[in-house]
Length: 549
Image 1 (cartoon, rainbow, N blue to C red):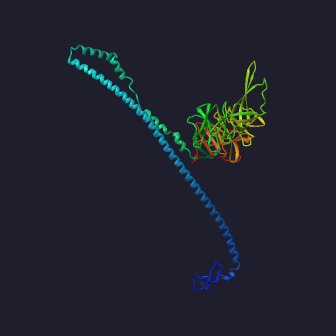
Image 2: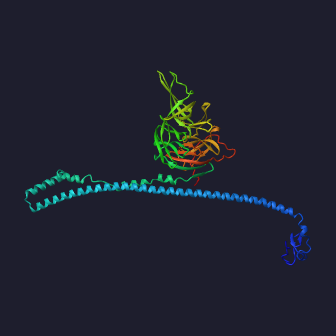
Image 3: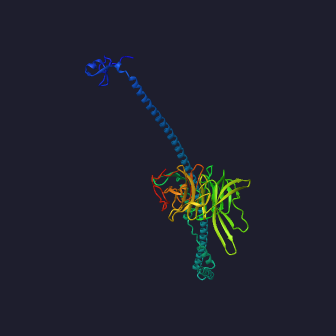
């Protein structure tokens, strides 16, 4: 390696280290600018320098590792962002293609509707025109006859035949008989036809509901401080009756979903049970008498219970279900009260449990007494060639008029909605309720119950249709109220049915026939030291906060 020369004195090499200035200098620098400064030879100055440089190198290598790790994370984030962008781009294109296809189909449907109405309008107008032309021709013929008689009388005033003809024609016209009767027929009951009233119905081909089915599908993520965050997505509308209630929802493993709903607003005497795709297309349907409940029985089969019917259904067929009671249901001896079992509800998603109203009637010569109670049944279903056998093991509970039921994942807690209205919690070892939930205030209107895993913890949800909210309860702490799920969310309107699927997604059926799916939900943590000792005294308010797409 060559010698390093001084910048200020190019002919001199750097041979010294100026200690106070900490710079390398040459002989001339030592005699001029650095005169009097302590200096040492560069060879002596390098003693111990190796260890210092190695320390610097170690620190640089550690920083280099950090930079490499950060750079790797940045590359991973970059790739993840790129994948997310590609997925979103694909979703946007798919949504655009779906909307475009739907718009074209809706346009064609509207044009076809217009064509059909136009054909009817043209046919009615043609018939009306023909009728008017006929009447006009007959009237012209009568006018020509009158003109001829008048002309004859003017030419021959003394002609008796013309006078007689004129007198008869005037009398018929005045009395409405003879030719006058024909005149009345021609001038009465003229067609009163309006084209606009007929064409007005064509606008119904593009209804707001049809448009909202596609435009209303973005995810609304609720971001409030006082209620749980929830991501809801509307899937489809299962019926067009505005006030019809969805009574049961049962999603299947293949992505289809069974829905039971009213056929008439406010009337549950007959309900429609139908299998839908996620886009709302009907694969099959059947009418069931009474309030219907649906739960998954086995693989592609569902167990359907109505007022007087028990069936299992698949996408292709329907079979009858026969109950097989075990020894826990004692045989009725002669002279004992008669008992009538009426199914009320099934547990959510899988038909693991059901609840029955037991109506006991005592017959005596003096009076007839009736008392209602309930039985929770453990269900085990098995298939035979032409029917299904449902084995049921009973244990009694004190529940008056149960309307809905669900069991937690362990089968140790049973939540029952009764008509009071109230939510009662039961344990298989005790017939009486171990906890009761009934907020003060006349507006609490529960419609369904469902166990759901929220923030990694299983909780009980209660659908409150009047307040358009879902109550979150801690069933392991005497139904302690924790908060509301989706309060204020515009999509969650009057929920009447709930269930979960295999991926712990919450499905909600609403009054009016709308079916929603909750992909994720989060319950905000309560502040330390604050506990909810009792249910809220007032129902939840509809809070308008920020909703993000």
